[in-house]
Image (tube, rainbow, N blue to C red; front, side, top):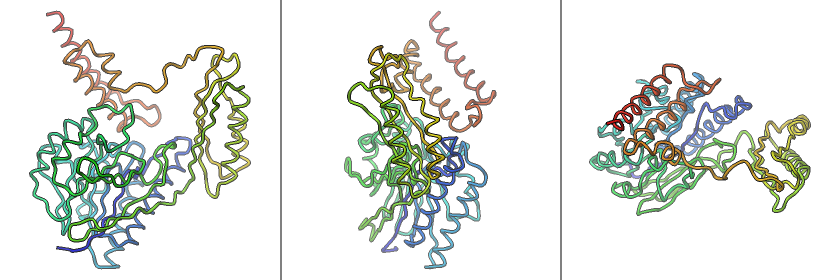
Length: 429
Protein backbone atom coordinates (compact mmCIF):
# COMPACT_ATOMS: atom_id res chain seq x y z
CA UNK A 1 0.00 0.00 0.00
CA UNK A 2 1.18 3.51 -0.81
CA UNK A 3 2.08 5.23 2.47
CA UNK A 4 1.64 8.80 1.26
CA UNK A 5 -0.98 10.18 -1.11
CA UNK A 6 -1.84 13.63 -2.38
CA UNK A 7 -5.43 14.16 -3.46
CA UNK A 8 -6.62 17.20 -5.40
CA UNK A 9 -10.26 18.15 -4.76
CA UNK A 10 -12.47 20.56 -6.66
CA UNK A 11 -16.13 20.98 -7.56
CA UNK A 12 -18.73 23.01 -9.42
CA UNK A 13 -16.48 24.11 -12.26
CA UNK A 14 -19.52 24.67 -14.55
CA UNK A 15 -17.45 24.72 -17.75
CA UNK A 16 -19.63 26.14 -20.52
CA UNK A 17 -21.72 28.43 -18.33
CA UNK A 18 -22.60 31.69 -20.07
CA UNK A 19 -24.84 33.55 -17.61
CA UNK A 20 -25.69 36.41 -17.55
CA UNK A 21 -26.43 36.20 -21.26
CA UNK A 22 -25.18 39.74 -21.93
CA UNK A 23 -21.73 38.50 -20.85
CA UNK A 24 -21.93 35.03 -22.36
CA UNK A 25 -18.47 34.99 -23.99
CA UNK A 26 -16.73 36.69 -21.06
CA UNK A 27 -18.24 34.34 -18.48
CA UNK A 28 -17.54 31.24 -20.57
CA UNK A 29 -13.88 32.30 -20.68
CA UNK A 30 -13.89 32.90 -16.91
CA UNK A 31 -15.03 29.34 -16.12
CA UNK A 32 -12.43 27.89 -18.50
CA UNK A 33 -9.76 30.14 -16.97
CA UNK A 34 -10.59 28.85 -13.47
CA UNK A 35 -10.63 25.22 -14.62
CA UNK A 36 -7.24 25.56 -16.31
CA UNK A 37 -5.78 27.11 -13.16
CA UNK A 38 -7.12 24.24 -11.05
CA UNK A 39 -5.46 21.69 -13.34
CA UNK A 40 -2.17 23.62 -13.24
CA UNK A 41 -2.28 23.67 -9.41
CA UNK A 42 -2.81 19.90 -9.33
CA UNK A 43 0.20 19.45 -11.62
CA UNK A 44 2.36 21.73 -9.46
CA UNK A 45 1.41 19.71 -6.37
CA UNK A 46 2.15 16.38 -8.08
CA UNK A 47 -1.14 14.81 -6.95
CA UNK A 48 -1.89 11.08 -7.02
CA UNK A 49 -5.65 11.47 -7.38
CA UNK A 50 -8.16 14.15 -8.36
CA UNK A 51 -11.75 14.11 -7.13
CA UNK A 52 -14.47 16.26 -8.71
CA UNK A 53 -17.68 16.59 -6.66
CA UNK A 54 -20.10 17.36 -9.50
CA UNK A 55 -21.20 20.03 -11.98
CA UNK A 56 -18.12 19.62 -14.11
CA UNK A 57 -20.10 21.16 -16.98
CA UNK A 58 -23.01 23.51 -17.57
CA UNK A 59 -24.79 21.08 -19.88
CA UNK A 60 -27.52 23.44 -21.02
CA UNK A 61 -25.15 26.00 -22.55
CA UNK A 62 -21.91 24.06 -23.13
CA UNK A 63 -20.52 23.61 -26.63
CA UNK A 64 -18.54 20.74 -28.20
CA UNK A 65 -15.45 22.94 -27.73
CA UNK A 66 -16.07 22.96 -23.96
CA UNK A 67 -16.02 19.15 -23.90
CA UNK A 68 -12.80 19.09 -25.94
CA UNK A 69 -11.27 21.70 -23.62
CA UNK A 70 -11.98 19.60 -20.50
CA UNK A 71 -10.73 16.39 -22.11
CA UNK A 72 -7.52 18.13 -23.13
CA UNK A 73 -6.95 19.63 -19.68
CA UNK A 74 -7.45 16.24 -18.02
CA UNK A 75 -5.07 14.65 -20.52
CA UNK A 76 -2.53 17.40 -19.83
CA UNK A 77 -2.84 16.75 -16.09
CA UNK A 78 -2.28 13.01 -16.45
CA UNK A 79 0.63 13.26 -18.90
CA UNK A 80 2.44 16.05 -17.03
CA UNK A 81 2.40 14.14 -13.75
CA UNK A 82 3.40 10.92 -15.49
CA UNK A 83 6.33 12.75 -17.09
CA UNK A 84 7.40 14.42 -13.82
CA UNK A 85 7.14 11.51 -11.41
CA UNK A 86 6.14 8.42 -13.36
CA UNK A 87 2.77 8.23 -11.58
CA UNK A 88 -0.44 7.18 -13.31
CA UNK A 89 -3.07 9.30 -11.61
CA UNK A 90 -6.81 8.72 -11.50
CA UNK A 91 -9.58 11.31 -11.87
CA UNK A 92 -12.83 10.39 -10.10
CA UNK A 93 -16.07 12.34 -10.52
CA UNK A 94 -19.75 12.27 -9.61
CA UNK A 95 -22.52 13.78 -11.73
CA UNK A 96 -24.02 17.08 -10.60
CA UNK A 97 -27.44 18.49 -11.47
CA UNK A 98 -25.94 20.79 -14.13
CA UNK A 99 -24.17 17.82 -15.76
CA UNK A 100 -27.53 16.37 -16.79
CA UNK A 101 -29.46 13.25 -15.88
CA UNK A 102 -28.17 9.66 -15.57
CA UNK A 103 -29.50 8.91 -19.06
CA UNK A 104 -28.14 12.12 -20.60
CA UNK A 105 -24.98 13.13 -18.75
CA UNK A 106 -22.40 15.59 -20.06
CA UNK A 107 -19.76 13.49 -18.28
CA UNK A 108 -20.23 10.94 -21.07
CA UNK A 109 -18.38 13.39 -23.34
CA UNK A 110 -15.21 12.80 -21.31
CA UNK A 111 -15.52 9.02 -20.94
CA UNK A 112 -13.47 7.17 -23.57
CA UNK A 113 -11.70 3.78 -23.70
CA UNK A 114 -8.39 5.62 -24.15
CA UNK A 115 -9.13 7.84 -21.13
CA UNK A 116 -8.94 5.04 -18.56
CA UNK A 117 -7.75 7.62 -16.02
CA UNK A 118 -11.26 9.14 -15.79
CA UNK A 119 -14.00 7.35 -13.85
CA UNK A 120 -17.53 8.42 -12.98
CA UNK A 121 -18.97 6.84 -9.84
CA UNK A 122 -22.35 7.11 -8.15
CA UNK A 123 -24.59 6.19 -11.09
CA UNK A 124 -24.93 2.42 -10.69
CA UNK A 125 -25.83 2.74 -7.00
CA UNK A 126 -28.89 4.75 -8.06
CA UNK A 127 -30.02 1.53 -9.77
CA UNK A 128 -29.23 -0.64 -6.74
CA UNK A 129 -25.84 -1.92 -7.95
CA UNK A 130 -22.66 -1.83 -5.83
CA UNK A 131 -20.04 0.54 -7.24
CA UNK A 132 -16.77 2.02 -5.98
CA UNK A 133 -13.30 3.10 -6.97
CA UNK A 134 -10.75 0.95 -5.11
CA UNK A 135 -7.19 2.19 -5.54
CA UNK A 136 -3.83 1.88 -3.84
CA UNK A 137 -4.42 3.40 -0.41
CA UNK A 138 -7.73 5.04 -1.38
CA UNK A 139 -11.35 3.96 -1.76
CA UNK A 140 -14.07 6.26 -3.11
CA UNK A 141 -17.82 5.69 -3.12
CA UNK A 142 -20.51 8.17 -4.09
CA UNK A 143 -23.96 9.03 -5.37
CA UNK A 144 -24.72 11.27 -8.33
CA UNK A 145 -27.22 14.10 -7.98
CA UNK A 146 -30.84 13.09 -7.45
CA UNK A 147 -33.83 15.47 -7.09
CA UNK A 148 -35.27 13.19 -4.38
CA UNK A 149 -31.97 12.71 -2.59
CA UNK A 150 -33.47 12.23 0.87
CA UNK A 151 -35.33 9.04 -0.03
CA UNK A 152 -32.79 7.91 -2.62
CA UNK A 153 -29.80 8.19 -0.29
CA UNK A 154 -31.70 6.33 2.41
CA UNK A 155 -31.96 3.47 -0.11
CA UNK A 156 -28.47 3.70 -1.61
CA UNK A 157 -26.74 4.04 1.76
CA UNK A 158 -27.72 0.42 2.44
CA UNK A 159 -25.93 -0.58 -0.77
CA UNK A 160 -22.91 1.64 -0.08
CA UNK A 161 -22.61 0.14 3.39
CA UNK A 162 -22.13 -3.35 1.89
CA UNK A 163 -19.17 -2.30 -0.29
CA UNK A 164 -15.85 -3.47 1.13
CA UNK A 165 -13.49 -0.51 1.07
CA UNK A 166 -10.12 0.04 2.69
CA UNK A 167 -7.33 2.60 2.84
CA UNK A 168 -8.54 6.18 3.20
CA UNK A 169 -12.30 6.04 2.58
CA UNK A 170 -14.12 8.93 0.88
CA UNK A 171 -17.79 9.44 0.06
CA UNK A 172 -18.58 11.99 -2.69
CA UNK A 173 -22.03 13.60 -3.08
CA UNK A 174 -23.69 16.41 -5.01
CA UNK A 175 -26.69 17.27 -2.85
CA UNK A 176 -27.22 19.38 0.24
CA UNK A 177 -26.82 17.68 3.62
CA UNK A 178 -28.81 18.87 6.64
CA UNK A 179 -26.77 20.50 9.43
CA UNK A 180 -23.77 20.76 7.07
CA UNK A 181 -24.70 23.26 4.35
CA UNK A 182 -26.26 26.70 4.51
CA UNK A 183 -29.33 25.47 2.65
CA UNK A 184 -31.22 28.08 0.58
CA UNK A 185 -34.71 28.65 2.07
CA UNK A 186 -36.55 27.61 -1.10
CA UNK A 187 -34.80 24.21 -1.35
CA UNK A 188 -37.32 21.32 -1.30
CA UNK A 189 -36.90 19.17 1.80
CA UNK A 190 -36.96 15.99 -0.28
CA UNK A 191 -33.75 17.04 -2.08
CA UNK A 192 -31.72 17.30 1.16
CA UNK A 193 -29.88 14.26 2.56
CA UNK A 194 -30.45 13.46 6.23
CA UNK A 195 -27.33 13.55 8.39
CA UNK A 196 -28.44 10.41 10.25
CA UNK A 197 -28.34 8.40 7.00
CA UNK A 198 -24.74 9.52 6.42
CA UNK A 199 -23.68 8.62 9.93
CA UNK A 200 -24.34 4.95 9.20
CA UNK A 201 -21.53 4.79 6.62
CA UNK A 202 -18.00 3.89 7.69
CA UNK A 203 -16.04 6.55 5.79
CA UNK A 204 -13.23 8.91 6.78
CA UNK A 205 -14.33 11.94 4.75
CA UNK A 206 -17.47 13.15 2.97
CA UNK A 207 -16.85 15.55 0.06
CA UNK A 208 -19.93 17.45 -1.09
CA UNK A 209 -20.43 19.61 -4.16
CA UNK A 210 -23.53 21.69 -5.03
CA UNK A 211 -22.78 24.41 -2.44
CA UNK A 212 -20.89 27.09 -4.39
CA UNK A 213 -19.50 29.09 -1.47
CA UNK A 214 -16.61 27.34 0.25
CA UNK A 215 -17.22 26.02 3.77
CA UNK A 216 -13.98 24.05 4.00
CA UNK A 217 -13.67 21.28 6.59
CA UNK A 218 -16.48 20.77 9.05
CA UNK A 219 -17.09 18.01 11.61
CA UNK A 220 -20.78 17.28 12.14
CA UNK A 221 -22.55 14.23 13.53
CA UNK A 222 -19.30 12.36 13.98
CA UNK A 223 -18.35 12.74 10.31
CA UNK A 224 -15.72 14.96 8.70
CA UNK A 225 -17.04 16.95 5.73
CA UNK A 226 -15.24 18.95 3.06
CA UNK A 227 -17.26 21.53 1.13
CA UNK A 228 -14.76 22.89 -1.44
CA UNK A 229 -17.16 25.31 -3.13
CA UNK A 230 -16.93 26.34 -6.77
CA UNK A 231 -13.86 27.42 -8.73
CA UNK A 232 -15.57 30.59 -10.01
CA UNK A 233 -18.64 32.60 -8.99
CA UNK A 234 -21.52 30.67 -10.56
CA UNK A 235 -23.96 33.47 -9.74
CA UNK A 236 -22.77 37.06 -9.43
CA UNK A 237 -23.87 37.38 -5.80
CA UNK A 238 -21.66 34.49 -4.62
CA UNK A 239 -18.67 35.38 -2.49
CA UNK A 240 -15.18 33.95 -2.84
CA UNK A 241 -12.42 33.22 -2.53
CA UNK A 242 -12.81 30.25 -4.87
CA UNK A 243 -10.26 27.53 -5.39
CA UNK A 244 -9.22 23.91 -4.81
CA UNK A 245 -7.98 21.70 -1.99
CA UNK A 246 -4.91 19.50 -1.69
CA UNK A 247 -5.19 16.67 0.85
CA UNK A 248 -2.14 14.89 2.27
CA UNK A 249 -2.95 11.29 3.29
CA UNK A 250 -0.40 9.15 5.14
CA UNK A 251 -1.04 5.62 6.33
CA UNK A 252 -4.77 6.09 5.76
CA UNK A 253 -4.92 9.28 7.83
CA UNK A 254 -5.51 12.88 6.76
CA UNK A 255 -2.40 14.57 8.13
CA UNK A 256 -2.53 17.91 6.30
CA UNK A 257 -4.60 19.91 3.86
CA UNK A 258 -4.43 23.28 2.15
CA UNK A 259 -6.74 25.54 0.21
CA UNK A 260 -5.24 27.13 -2.92
CA UNK A 261 -7.07 30.18 -4.18
CA UNK A 262 -7.76 30.61 -7.89
CA UNK A 263 -7.01 34.02 -9.37
CA UNK A 264 -10.23 34.93 -11.24
CA UNK A 265 -10.25 36.28 -14.77
CA UNK A 266 -12.74 38.96 -13.75
CA UNK A 267 -13.32 40.88 -10.52
CA UNK A 268 -16.90 40.44 -9.33
CA UNK A 269 -18.06 42.98 -6.78
CA UNK A 270 -21.25 43.01 -4.73
CA UNK A 271 -22.28 46.33 -3.17
CA UNK A 272 -25.32 47.70 -1.41
CA UNK A 273 -27.08 51.04 -1.43
CA UNK A 274 -29.45 51.11 1.54
CA UNK A 275 -31.08 53.85 3.60
CA UNK A 276 -32.45 53.39 7.11
CA UNK A 277 -34.85 56.28 6.57
CA UNK A 278 -36.97 57.53 3.64
CA UNK A 279 -34.92 59.34 1.00
CA UNK A 280 -35.65 60.97 -2.32
CA UNK A 281 -35.21 58.87 -5.45
CA UNK A 282 -32.39 61.17 -6.61
CA UNK A 283 -30.43 60.30 -3.46
CA UNK A 284 -30.53 56.60 -4.39
CA UNK A 285 -29.53 57.40 -7.98
CA UNK A 286 -26.58 59.52 -6.86
CA UNK A 287 -25.36 56.91 -4.35
CA UNK A 288 -25.61 54.13 -6.95
CA UNK A 289 -23.51 56.03 -9.46
CA UNK A 290 -20.95 56.87 -6.76
CA UNK A 291 -20.63 53.19 -5.81
CA UNK A 292 -20.27 52.14 -9.45
CA UNK A 293 -17.56 54.72 -10.14
CA UNK A 294 -15.71 53.82 -6.94
CA UNK A 295 -15.68 50.16 -8.02
CA UNK A 296 -14.53 51.02 -11.56
CA UNK A 297 -11.66 53.23 -10.33
CA UNK A 298 -10.04 50.32 -8.47
CA UNK A 299 -10.19 47.71 -11.24
CA UNK A 300 -6.94 46.10 -12.38
CA UNK A 301 -8.74 43.75 -14.79
CA UNK A 302 -12.25 43.30 -16.20
CA UNK A 303 -14.88 43.92 -13.55
CA UNK A 304 -18.53 43.03 -13.01
CA UNK A 305 -20.61 44.74 -10.33
CA UNK A 306 -23.84 43.55 -8.75
CA UNK A 307 -25.54 46.43 -6.95
CA UNK A 308 -28.36 45.73 -4.49
CA UNK A 309 -30.54 48.77 -3.82
CA UNK A 310 -33.27 48.85 -1.17
CA UNK A 311 -35.16 51.36 0.94
CA UNK A 312 -38.13 53.68 1.21
CA UNK A 313 -38.74 56.54 -1.21
CA UNK A 314 -39.93 59.82 0.35
CA UNK A 315 -42.03 60.66 -2.70
CA UNK A 316 -45.46 59.79 -4.05
CA UNK A 317 -44.13 57.18 -6.49
CA UNK A 318 -46.25 53.98 -6.53
CA UNK A 319 -43.64 52.06 -8.53
CA UNK A 320 -40.30 53.84 -7.98
CA UNK A 321 -37.50 52.98 -10.41
CA UNK A 322 -33.93 54.25 -10.59
CA UNK A 323 -33.80 54.51 -14.38
CA UNK A 324 -30.00 54.97 -14.47
CA UNK A 325 -29.06 52.72 -17.39
CA UNK A 326 -27.96 55.71 -19.48
CA UNK A 327 -25.59 56.94 -16.75
CA UNK A 328 -24.26 53.40 -16.23
CA UNK A 329 -23.51 53.10 -19.94
CA UNK A 330 -21.54 56.35 -19.82
CA UNK A 331 -19.48 55.06 -16.88
CA UNK A 332 -18.75 51.83 -18.76
CA UNK A 333 -17.52 53.87 -21.72
CA UNK A 334 -15.36 55.97 -19.40
CA UNK A 335 -13.89 52.93 -17.58
CA UNK A 336 -13.21 50.26 -20.17
CA UNK A 337 -12.46 47.56 -17.56
CA UNK A 338 -16.02 47.84 -16.23
CA UNK A 339 -17.85 45.34 -18.46
CA UNK A 340 -21.20 44.90 -16.69
CA UNK A 341 -23.36 46.35 -13.91
CA UNK A 342 -26.39 44.47 -12.63
CA UNK A 343 -28.76 46.50 -10.45
CA UNK A 344 -31.31 44.79 -8.21
CA UNK A 345 -33.99 47.20 -6.94
CA UNK A 346 -36.24 46.77 -3.90
CA UNK A 347 -37.62 50.27 -3.54
CA UNK A 348 -41.06 51.15 -2.21
CA UNK A 349 -42.89 54.40 -1.58
CA UNK A 350 -43.57 55.62 1.95
CA UNK A 351 -46.67 57.40 0.65
CA UNK A 352 -48.39 54.38 -0.87
CA UNK A 353 -48.49 50.74 0.27
CA UNK A 354 -45.83 48.41 -1.02
CA UNK A 355 -47.48 46.44 -3.80
CA UNK A 356 -44.62 44.05 -4.34
CA UNK A 357 -45.92 41.43 -1.91
CA UNK A 358 -44.24 39.65 0.95
CA UNK A 359 -40.47 39.61 0.92
CA UNK A 360 -38.50 36.40 1.15
CA UNK A 361 -40.65 34.25 -1.12
CA UNK A 362 -41.90 30.73 -0.46
CA UNK A 363 -40.44 27.39 -1.37
CA UNK A 364 -41.49 25.25 -4.31
CA UNK A 365 -42.74 22.62 -1.84
CA UNK A 366 -45.03 25.17 -0.19
CA UNK A 367 -46.42 26.26 -3.56
CA UNK A 368 -47.11 22.64 -4.53
CA UNK A 369 -48.85 21.96 -1.21
CA UNK A 370 -50.96 25.12 -1.56
CA UNK A 371 -52.06 24.43 -5.14
CA UNK A 372 -52.38 20.64 -5.08
CA UNK A 373 -53.40 20.07 -1.46
CA UNK A 374 -56.83 18.88 -2.63
CA UNK A 375 -55.15 15.82 -4.18
CA UNK A 376 -54.57 14.35 -0.73
CA UNK A 377 -52.24 11.34 -0.91
CA UNK A 378 -51.53 12.02 -4.58
CA UNK A 379 -49.78 15.31 -3.79
CA UNK A 380 -46.49 13.39 -3.85
CA UNK A 381 -47.05 12.53 -7.52
CA UNK A 382 -47.74 16.18 -8.29
CA UNK A 383 -44.53 17.23 -6.53
CA UNK A 384 -42.57 14.63 -8.52
CA UNK A 385 -43.91 15.95 -11.83
CA UNK A 386 -43.02 19.52 -10.83
CA UNK A 387 -39.46 18.45 -9.94
CA UNK A 388 -39.10 16.51 -13.21
CA UNK A 389 -40.24 19.59 -15.16
CA UNK A 390 -37.60 21.69 -13.38
CA UNK A 391 -34.89 19.16 -14.27
CA UNK A 392 -36.08 19.00 -17.89
CA UNK A 393 -35.97 22.80 -18.16
CA UNK A 394 -32.39 22.77 -16.82
CA UNK A 395 -31.33 20.16 -19.37
CA UNK A 396 -33.43 20.67 -22.46
CA UNK A 397 -34.96 24.15 -22.54
CA UNK A 398 -34.22 26.26 -25.58
CA UNK A 399 -31.56 28.90 -24.92
CA UNK A 400 -33.55 31.33 -27.06
CA UNK A 401 -37.04 30.87 -25.60
CA UNK A 402 -36.41 29.05 -22.31
CA UNK A 403 -39.18 26.57 -23.28
CA UNK A 404 -39.24 22.81 -23.80
CA UNK A 405 -39.81 21.28 -27.21
CA UNK A 406 -43.33 20.14 -28.06
CA UNK A 407 -42.53 16.44 -27.54
CA UNK A 408 -41.14 17.08 -24.05
CA UNK A 409 -44.09 19.30 -23.15
CA UNK A 410 -46.51 16.60 -24.29
CA UNK A 411 -44.84 14.03 -22.06
CA UNK A 412 -45.49 16.20 -19.00
CA UNK A 413 -49.00 17.26 -20.04
CA UNK A 414 -49.89 13.56 -20.44
CA UNK A 415 -48.65 12.86 -16.90
CA UNK A 416 -50.74 15.73 -15.53
CA UNK A 417 -53.82 14.50 -17.39
CA UNK A 418 -53.41 10.98 -16.03
CA UNK A 419 -52.94 12.23 -12.46
CA UNK A 420 -55.84 14.68 -12.52
CA UNK A 421 -58.15 12.30 -14.42
CA UNK A 422 -57.56 9.59 -11.83
CA UNK A 423 -58.24 12.09 -9.05
CA UNK A 424 -61.50 13.25 -10.66
CA UNK A 425 -62.50 9.62 -11.23
CA UNK A 426 -61.90 8.69 -7.59
CA UNK A 427 -63.74 11.81 -6.42
CA UNK A 428 -66.81 10.90 -8.49
CA UNK A 429 -66.81 7.40 -7.02
